[in-house]
Amino acid sequence: MQFEPVIGLEIHAQLNTKSKLFCTASTEFGQLPNTNVSPVSLGLPGALPVLNKEAVQLAIMAGIALDCEIQERSIWARKNYFYADLPKGYQISQFEHPICLGGRVHLIDLNKTVRITRIHMEEDAGKLNHQGADGIAGATSSAADLNRAGVPLIEIVSEPDIRTAQEARAYMEKVHQILTFIGVCDGDLEKGSFRCDANISVRPVGESAFGTRTEVKNLNSFRSIERAVEFEINRQISVISSGGAIVQQTMNFDDTSGETTPLRSKENAHDYRYFPDPDLQPLIVTASTIAAIKSSMPELPDAIQERYSTILALPAHDIKVYLQNRPLFDLFEASCAHLKKATPKDLSKWVVGDLNALIKESNTPITQAPQVFAELVDRCSANDVSTKMVKDLLPVLVKGTPLDDAIKAMGGGQISDQTELTTMVDAVLNEHPDVVEKIKNGKTNSANFLMGQIMKKTQGRANPDAVLALILDACKPQ
Ligand code: ADP
Ligand code: MG
Image 1 (cartoon, rainbow, N blue to C red):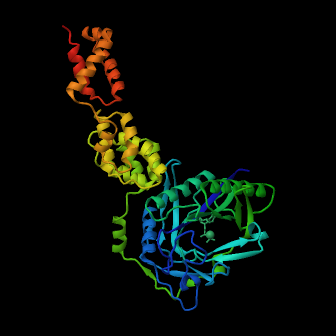
Image 2 (cartoon, helix red, strand yellow):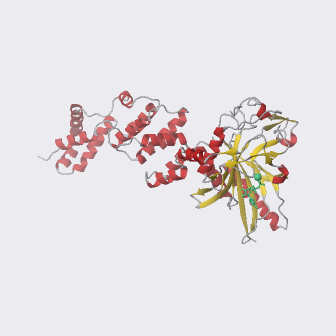
Image 3 (tube, rainbow, N blue to C red):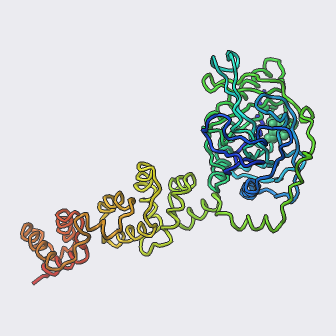
C-alpha cells in the first residue's frame, strides 16, 4: 500500500523586545540564572501583568508579513498545567480569539503554498537545568531558571498542508527568513529564539480523512526538522504496514541517533482548562493602528526577490545572500541608490563578494558612507580604477577612510598627466617596434597589446582612454 504523509507545523518565535510580555524584566540571553525576573515573571501572588505594547506591534508585523487577517479584538487566556518551570501554574496565551487568523507562505522553489491557520501570542515558560548526570532520566537534581519565563512568543500554526520532509524544512526556513528579515525575531536557533513542533500522520493514498498524528516537539534546526519528519513518516508507515496502529502521542527527537521516541501521551485542549485571564483586558487593536504598522513595514522578501531578479537582474545567489543578511541588504540598497554609471549587478558583485567577507572578518559594522562604494564601482565601470585597485581599496574603505585619501595612499589614482603618460607610451613603443609597424599598417587592434603593457607597468592606474589616444596618435600611418 502507498502512503501519503500529512504534516502541520507549530512554530514558536521569540519576539525581539527588550523586556518581557507582561513585566519590565529583561529578555537578555545568557544572564546568571534567575536574574532577569520580577514579581510578575516569578508568579508571586498579587503581582499583576501589564502588557508590553512593542510585543503586540511585532506580532502584528509578523501577521502582516505572513498574509494574515489581524484581529481587532483578541483575548488573553490561561492555559493551566503544572510544571516546575511554571511557578504561576498557568501560561498566559491566546486560545479562542488569537491576534491573527488565516495567512499563507509561498515556497517559491517548490511552487507550493502552505496556509497558516492562526498566530497567537503567549509567554514562554522557564527552563529546567538537569544536573548530576546527562539527560532527564539520570539527573540527580534539576534547577529552575526563570530568566526565560514571560519572554514574549508568537506561535504560528500551519494548516496540515505539508506533504514531505523537504517541504517541512523549506516552510520553516521561509518563515524564519521572513521574521528575521523584518526584525520581528532575532532568529537565533541555538538560543531557542525560533523552534518548531511537527505534527505528522500518514494515510493511504486516495484517502481523504487524516490519520492519527504524533507531535515531535522542540525541533531547533532546519536539519533536525527534515530528519525528524523523515524518520517519523517511515516509522508510522512501518507500524501500519505491519498491522499496528499509531498512538496519538508527543515525541522527542534525538539528534544523535536520528530517532523519535515517545515523550508523553498527547494532551487535548480541554486538559488545560483554558479560560479568559481575569487580570487582563481584551486586546483591542484599532484598524488605524494596523494600517500604521502596515505602512511602516519594510519591503518583504518575496517582493524583493521579484524586484531584484526581474528589474535589477541580480544573480539568484546574490538575492539569497541579501535575504539572509539584512545589514548587507541595507548597505546594498543605500549604496545602489547612488550609482551613476555602473549597474546594480556590478555593485552587487563587490558587496556580496569582497565587502561581505570583509564585514564578516572584522565583525564590526561598517562606518563608511554607502555612496562611497557606489562611487568606487562607478569609477571602476568608467575605467578610472581597475578591478585590482577596487580589491585593494575595499579593505581600506571599510575602515571609514575617504575614497580620495585611500587612492592617494595606494600611490595615487589614475594617471592622467599627459607628460607622464607620453614618456611611458614612448618607452613601450620603443620596446615593440614590430607592433608599432602593425598598427601603422591598419591593425589598430594591436594597440590593446601596448595598452596592456602600460597597465602592467602602472598596476592598472594609467587612464586607458588617454593612453589609447597617445598610442594611436604615435602610430598614425605616414
Ligand atoms: P494541538 O492544539 O493539539 O497542538 P491543533 O489542532 O491546534 O492541535 O493542531 C496543531 C497542528 O497539527 C496544526 O499545525 C495542524 O495543521 C496539525 N494537524 C492537525 N491534525 C493533523 C493530522 N492528522 N496530521 C498531521 N498534522 C495535523
Ligand atoms: Mg500543539
